[in-house]
Image 1 (tube, rainbow, N blue to C red):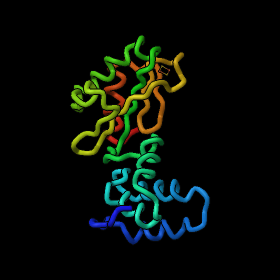
Image 2 (image 1 turned 60 degrees about the horizontal axis):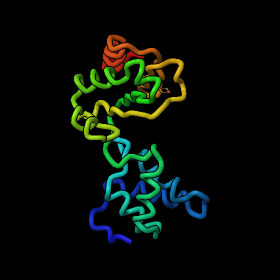
Image 3 (image 1 turned 60 degrees about the vertical axis):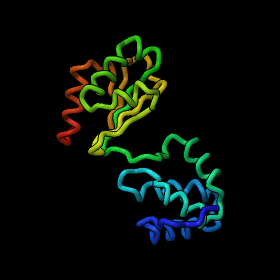
Length: 171
Ligand code: FES
């Protein structure tokens, strides 16, 4: 169990969350989920995980195995917008690699993606770019999701328009 050296800024709110899950099933998962929502960049900082570990009396190793198992948990700050490019076979065949290359050209992050990282976030925290193995919509390849909205048969010019609209706050 960690000794909490660095108190998270939102310790008070974390205490309330932990209290609200007292004697509830799925307590650990629930607390982690709510704790992530507290963070404006939608992730679980190290001090938050340490704090939860000490308060719930759950080993850090268990918390990290949960957080790394579920894809909706993040250990790094996330962008205001999320772009997910499908890299499954059908999408690859229909050009998803060039979509990803275009995104890398727009936002940087080429190194991260080429280095095998599944995602990167722009330094201004505006966009997080992820890849996924398959959206289950192979007939619509190539598929890109922007802020949870699925776009099908996406071409590079269309992708640029979608990113532009997202930046301007239009749907
Ligand atoms: S391979 Fe892209 S949706 Fe299935």
